[in-house]
Length: 604
Image 1 (spheres, one colour):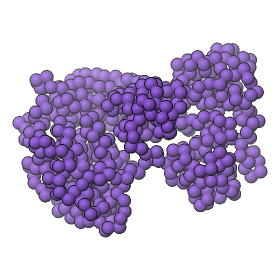
Image 2: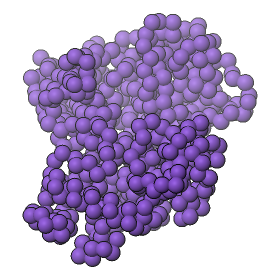
Image 3: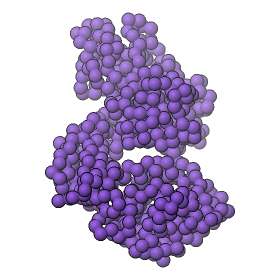
Image 4: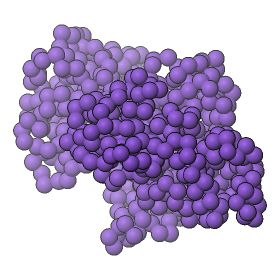
């Protein structure tokens, strides 16, 4: 039925669970229009090349037929709510990235199917005519010298400002990718795409900088209506080349010389509607004439405009240094990348472990970077450039939240048997914990026959041999497999060794068993009690080895000094700096305390 003369595009489906932290392999993806069935691989990905209209149709306004194909998907996996998606857009020569987070049936409150109705593309259906309300937003904010920052998240109202629509909160960079995929065609020249994305970033940053909607009593940053702001389609697919460009320039905005704030960069399609700002179709003509993106921006917004870079508010304080990392690079940034890739590799087995993460960019590092780039749709060059650095950071922050979680999403209790044997070939947090326990026993000096392991999260022959040695000590069958009896004996011995060597912080005059499990609620300024005593004592010990973390008086009261010490600890160890001891900071305090006392590596 679709005779597109050989033109093709690609549908790429990526399935996850727990807000992207776990990939879902073995899921069925049906392309309903074609009767085609796919299965997601070990990274939760399935892809199909499908017919699409020729690219030329999307390079000219008002083509005789729709310039993109539309496909419907049905996604299913036993134990999960199925997803049916209507209206995935596919362009000639472009990858359409469809990312969905699946929900377990037991968590879905009776829901068995999730319907995603994609809205039409903005250029194909809606003229982008700014309303009087939008034009009123061009007034400048007070010149208070506030810096322009790129927030982590944006709250979007899924309709016109006064409508009774729901709000969704999405990462800023994902918001920009969504708008760009909804407003312009991905087949356009790169310089045209960049100019349009500069305008889209400027518009949303102007809304945030001027607090346009909150100042009027609304509880969102921007609307999804193209009549007032710009077109946002919840849960739509993102085009791969648009994603690549946004990853490079998401923090670039348009400003006028002599002013701080981003301009409210109005735009319209320039064919069905006209406005005082940028013409979307006009950018294509200018790019084809040889204009670069800045020249296009100045053509529409004036010669007194320039492109500036906002300050990114990071979840992790380690920002990109500005220098790409590649063969021959060395130092703290290389070590950071190596450690993060090793942690990511536990959840993404296709990525090889870097066996000697010593801060030198060696062949193992380049190989791991290439596979990471391949896995997450980045240019496969083996170099950690800005895009790769921030994608590693994003994925690392997602997977490290599983350090306290079992695969079913329950909190890990120290010493608790995970419910399944560990055997050759296994990998993951439970293997990493077992290696940690074995190393603590080995380094105690009480059992010299127990070898010290490489901490890599892989149950290899080295781990198996160490387990056999311990099983011999315990009088168990030396199978080399960690069954429940072996797990319990190893963790009990580990606890005995730890209590003998390092009894843990003194709390209220009594010895507290370190590591203490997370209490279930965050500790912050105003908190009191034994758990506050506990973290204060941990901070006191850590201070002996890292003077950047101040010591505090252990009084059980979470005051200003404790908060400042937590700030310093979070900054020193790559955590979100908020002065609150949540589960990640608690875990890191426990781990760094152990590392400070006897050199045990930090998990996660």
